Image (cartoon, rainbow, N blue to C red; front, top):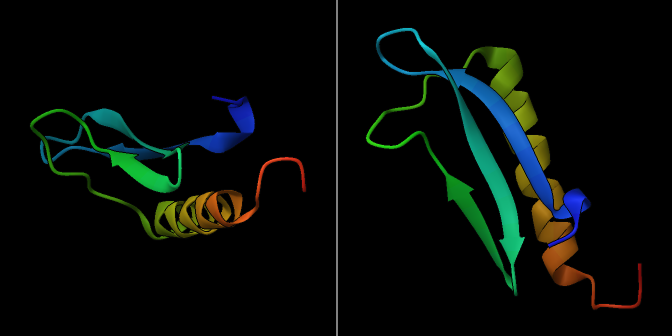
Amino acid sequence: MAAKDEWSISCRDLAGRRRDLTVFVSSDRVVIVAPPGEAAVLAPLDVGRLRAALRDAVVSVATPVGEE
């Protein structure tokens, strides 16, 4: 997996500890990995980062290999 196909978004769990959401591309799918066993609490700016990461991942999935 190329580094450009993975994004990390800062968040906090319900106890306020720093965590990360990870978005990556696997074949023709977009995968979101949340903190294990936790809920992700996002600040408004981090929601924007998640949105941007999801948009970039979808574009990456939709772009055939070799057309980048």
